[in-house]
Length: 584
Image (cartoon, rainbow, N blue to C red; front, side):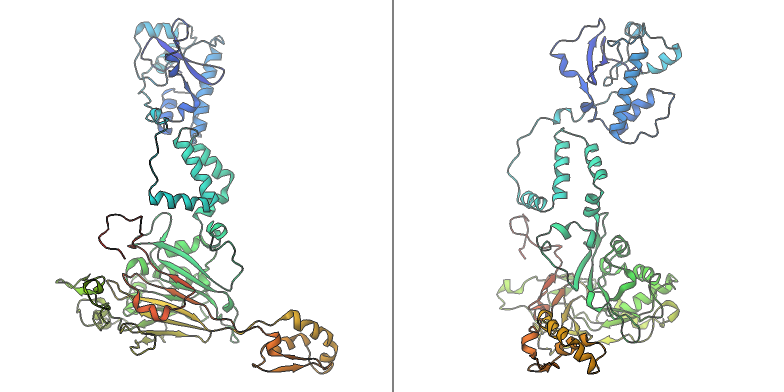
């Protein structure tokens, strides 16, 4: 194809796949001008759109719509140039117009450029159409620039990269591309050859690459209790992560009870917008296995995903099974009932809502002139007070007649099984004299299932908000099978003759012996509980706080926690955050 030129010289394709500047007499340019030669690597700095425009202007009789990748487009251009040279008397020094310049040749230049071309006149004219120049904005960016001292954020970023080899590998390719050492095609090729790398960077739960490389997780053994963070973003979901949603998987409770109902499953804490998408992206959370949902407060990034999640759960759940239990602040029941009724969502599973009543606002949140609340004083101790103000009863239903919690009881919408809601939802009232209350803040005893208890305490936030504490009861010690099993095997025949149909079940009897108890086998061997049963294991404690400027009220309940999940939207990081007005 013919491209216009800005001077009486043109490019030819050399055997090394470089476009080299030649003058019209066939002589090469001076050494000074040799720096203008363009290689395939140079063309990679042009955008795909610019290169496609060049192909379009060539008016080729073949289809080029299959060319998608930048590397394929560049290879195609050079192939066409090479064919053009072969077709014209196989002259290696035959010229083609500049790929870079947009200058329209004069009559003399045109005559000299096409005098040896055996092409139809109309095709020659069509290919001599001047093209806009390809401006190489990156041509001057290959010079290494001196790098200043790393900022604290850069240092942390580099440290994180070292922890995750897949991230480090991708970052090295990106840096090489920025330095002009390769192209974005190398990154695409790497990801196409290693799909697990990209899957690990975008996956959730068991597919998250952090499962393999994070220092807190690399040495973990299998557990019957684990946590999956399905969403961590604030305010609105992004393309790479969703808003607040944490799943607690209670693996030991997956078995079915005597009546056939599943007693175990997954507990969800907060259900922000896009939660149903995040859950579908991970195999760690099955919608049909979710048995409880806990909402910390009414803000949309913690509750907007609840109706949608119920709809997807209804497609993967036995409607004759136990109902889904939902817990949250006062007003949640009527809000959810209205949302499902308005959208005619009959597909939702059977559920019931338990409301935490009379959640007070923290004393540092004051009511403004127009009914809204603002953070009046973050830390009263800064003004000489020895301790923070005591929690009271501000912000309760009825204080603001226009608030949802004040208006919801007035709505005349009854529960309907046709829309999933069944009877049995409780109103859970606060306890102000609980031994673990802090600064006069109340505590709610949300749920007690024997082996696991759930408590709640208020958070300092702009709307009524709570944090939850999941407290597991102590578990009995494990049986030393290595000590007991040989004795049982030795007495197997005698135990069966004594009427025990399954002699190995005697091990369960020994495990359940009371402290100080013993068991004597038929051969006279006596074993004592203290010798073959390990000490009781401490129960685990998980604390999940809602949005808060201060979580002091949950301090009593959270003491000794194994895991604390706390939002950090406006947290102050010393040495990283600059020009902040207040350190937290």
